[in-house]
Length: 242
Image (tube, rainbow, N blue to C red):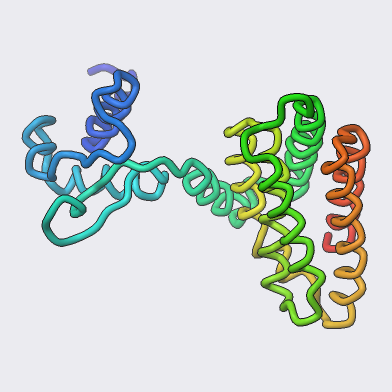
């Protein structure tokens, strides 16, 4: 009898995932198109319909498909592309389980955001498409955070969006997706950190000033200044809530 451990057999649903990946790479499937039905996929790959449903659920969580019930052209699984959704779900679970430390995520944010700020500055001669609109949106988000009536959770949501919007000025879609997922992965941790209203009011006042200075540096294409302000802002807030 062999004493070598047997390798685990691949999951049945993996055949569907692999086939869809191959079809996307080859251009046989495109975003916006509908996947074949459960029965067709099950017959094609010689697996059960339950395994096909497992594959579709995984793709849904990954932000690769959107599913809907019923009949007609919009029913079933339609290919989409929302990379931040899948990355964020995975990160939040691993942060919650303490497999990924918040400090490591903070350092990753600093690397991404400071790089994006400098990259946006370097694109000043030929900014990314819609740069003026992106900056206008960032300004609106800062104004929203400064509204006296804004609630704490709404402030955090506006704050998260502000950082993602600024990162998008780098023109790097991967950076933008990673930024959105990183912000969402620590959203609950951040929103629960302030234990009292007075404590939060004091922190919020500093955050508002920091956001105004960051926005001004980015708008004026002062990449190094913007990067340094972002680093100071992220590190300061982490110290306050840590």
